[in-house]
Amino acid sequence: MNNLKRIFVWISRMGHCRGFGIQSPTDYQFVRHVVNQHWPYYAYSEIGKDDDWLKRKLGRLYFRLANWRQPDTIVDAVGAEEYLSAGCRKAQFVDHCDTVQMACVPIACDYQTLFSHCDSQSVVIFQDIWKQMPLWHSIEHDERVTVCYDLYYCGIVFFDKKRAKQCYTVNF
Image (cartoon, rainbow, N blue to C red; front, side, top):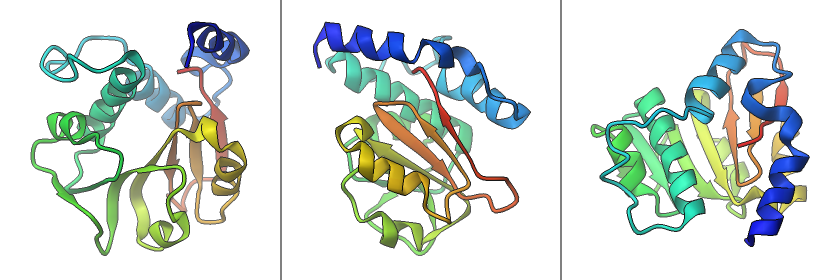
């Protein structure tokens, strides 16, 4: 992605910076303290030294998500194991499991099958949603999804049935 397009994406999402427009305290705190956290974490200097800017940016987000959620198992289909394992050292990486705790998958995966293994504690991260926005919109509108975050470069989906359905656009 060239710099001009990157700037255009950032400007077009400028109204969604730092959790602006998010009314739920839980969702606002998630965006402020996990998604858009700018403080350097303990492992940032050790991981992703040779990665390009986007892989490093997404990797640091995956690190913060794993650090926040602390899952026992992670399904990683995008090659982010270095970042995810730094965020949660106890996590085991699996190809599939009965109940998904955290999954990091490409947008073109079979999300119907993946969602059938998700429960109220599951977190699914879809990478490269900007490449297939119609597919991302069908994921957002799936009845099993309750809260989702469109970060342009990736999407984060939650399945907590106690929550009202809400989809947020976040400038990441």
